[in-house]
Image (cartoon, rainbow, N blue to C red; front, side, top):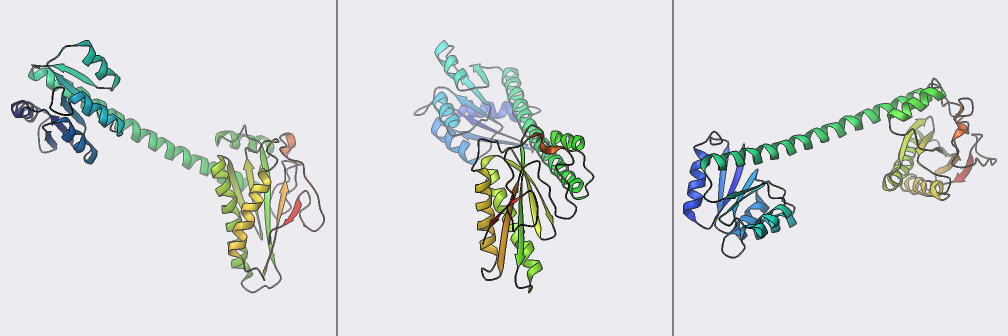
Length: 317
């Protein structure tokens, strides 16, 4: 389906253009032709309808064709524009070029000249749409591929099957290979066992999503995994100079958990470590064993009271 707007102050000119188009191979049930008698009306129609091509006469009362084209461009309309002009002047042509006008035809333009210009402009618009669709499809495929790679990283981590070289390969394919990595662990425990399982999972989800939200705003990436009553977030892109980064993420986890857990029942902690740390939750790999310590954004602080060695503890609630 093609939708074309014809803007000319002379009704006879509009009628002639309509006849040329409708009687050509471009005509048919899928063709929609709209008309405007001045530039202001053309600009108004361009706001409310998606045209494939807009034909503008230069000389129209009030807002002329180039003025209408300029207004359309300012308002975000990128539809191909064909200008019809009785004036072969450098000034008009130069202004039309600046506005990104696709074709500039001199009156009286012949039937074949008009149709060829329309074919080119319609093909250009379809090519842009096709490129946009392909780009959107490619981004979707890339996003799915990255999600798959991240899931493979987690599966391998939990199964302790991932060696250093394989980890580097997965990270490279997922676009994470050049980024430093750090670990944040969130552990949730309860003094009262009632409903503890559902609350633990809700608390871990809230903590992870809180961290994820901050990371998204900062343009950083994360792979998260839950193991038992603990959640581990493998965070990419924290540089050593950003000493406040982990603190921001812990604050985000704290806020998420506070909104989820009853204050009288919940007691949580956050474990912080770098690439050398050992994750002692069941199934998680030993980062020291696999030689992951070459990229160290932060030192590990060991404090008593948290059962995972290699991590420091911070009370969340």
